[in-house]
Image 1 (cartoon, rainbow, N blue to C red):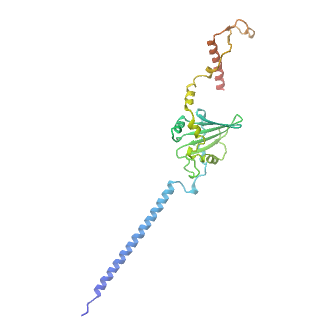
Image 2: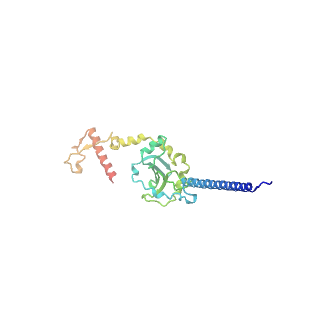
Image 3: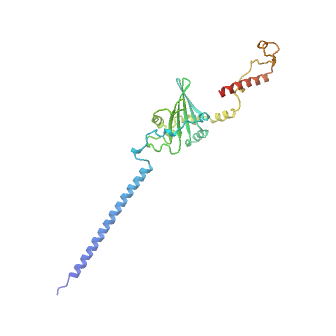
Length: 263
């Protein structure tokens, strides 16, 4: 008697169908995982691009932030820490704070807010002002290859107006000084004696007349009633003491100094 094999064949077909469905499901899950990984990779890549700045074609033109730099109105209150002479050219380099010099001399970076100004003279007359200023976040719009840290630059005329100039040259000039925070006169700043500044401030209330030699000077006191110039050289003049002499000379010179300062 032959067995009926149909039930076994039906069951076998069902198992094959279930196996095919399982394989298809595994393939679908694998494809989904691959897509997710690819998406994550693209997102991570995009995040890395965003964190490093805009794409190369979107970087700002170097020097386009020069308008951020204003003329330092308190320039004369700054510290001249370096000077240069080349023929008929003389340059004074100012920095706007003693604290900035102290930071450098302590091995620290120049702080945000540092302003350095080159005052250029030609034949004894002011020829130009070149200003570089450092602020947190400045320069981030430039490509990493071109920016000078957080520095921006500006050029001014002798009348302290913005000068039409190619500011990109400033970046190029300072670019090779990256190790010195893009400063060409870092060595002079490190060697600058801040004691001179303190001494200058301490003596600012004293007049320079205290160091003027008066030996050999002859000062005569003239009576108030002698209005005629012919009487000036007469014997009515009385020779005053050395102490009074020094005092009167200092008063006269101080008066002249203050008049010159006000003018």
